[in-house]
Amino acid sequence: MTGKRWPLTFVAGCAIAIALAACGSSSSSSSAAKSTSTAAGTTSTSAAAASVPFSSIEQTVPAGYPAPKPKKLVLAYLNPEGSSNEFLTILGQSMKLATQKLGGTYVELDAEGDVNKQVSQFDQLLAQKVNGIAVFALDPKSLAPDVARARAAGIHLVTIDLNFNSTTALGGYESQVWQRRDEAAYMTGMETAKLAGSGAPVGTIDFMIKVPSIVYSIDRDVYWGEKFGLKVTGNASNPSDDIAGGEKAMTTLLGASHSIKGVMAYNDPSAIGAGSAARSQGITNLVLAGENGGTDGLGAIKAGRETFTIKLDDPSMGKDFAWGLYDLSEGVKIPPTVKAGPPVLVDKANVNSTLSWEQQLKQEYPGS
Image 1: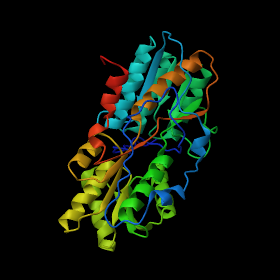
Image 2: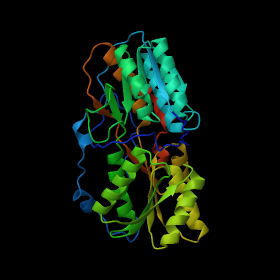
Image 3: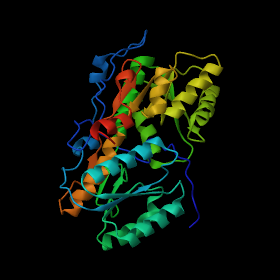
């Protein structure tokens, strides 16, 4: 097998989902309320939003796993590229804190974007006979043999956003956590339409590497945007998964049409870069919609370089990893699919009252 390296800011991780139901017992999220303010001249209203109800498969699954009993277990997290990615780092920290609170021992291995390295790390954990592994796969097909070996050895496995269309077809994993990206796309489409105006032309920015979760996320942005009356005129790809790549993608979009009124991007760096590229051409007042809600996005909103972001509940996902593996070790029958805590729309109106992911962890685990 040839080696693959994935340059990851990785959207909040390689994943996708759907949902609107309230947060369950294992989910924690910031309490910032969604802003309802609109830009001058827009024609969309709350009545229009009500006319497009959110409907998704994610509404059929619970939020989080049952609270487990404390026990001495060794749980591991296969991190695809944590050293350079805030989302993936926080995910691991959350799983670590939840595991330690339950009396367990936590192990994390960082593949640094290398598929072959992640396979070797999975082999290492099997040899160590850990009790459970949370797998964030760079390439699910490459890990399939190890998944089969883990199950044969009685090692429990959970993963994230493995299957976007089925709650039960998990290829050997016992459960998956959905990030709720379809709901995030719904919120993006609704807010962009509210700010840009009904019928406004907008573009999208995806990642050059067609990570299934990113492809799905942008597809849903387009779907919901059009449901709310937007006219999606084109897409461009971020070649480097960062702000500079967002600038390049936006330059491509503007080269095709200077009439666009906004952009819906798969992550915050792409939205920030899009704004920079537009300003360099004298174009202002665009709706710059990002996703993830990490410190880069929150900072950009405060500085006026991004209009809004959809903040995913990253800490709840790490906690779900730990709780799911603990439940499985106790023989508890858990749902094959659960969803993370609800996403939150963050803009200028509520950014100062919105907790960062790290602040969420400190609130849930004082002294951490």
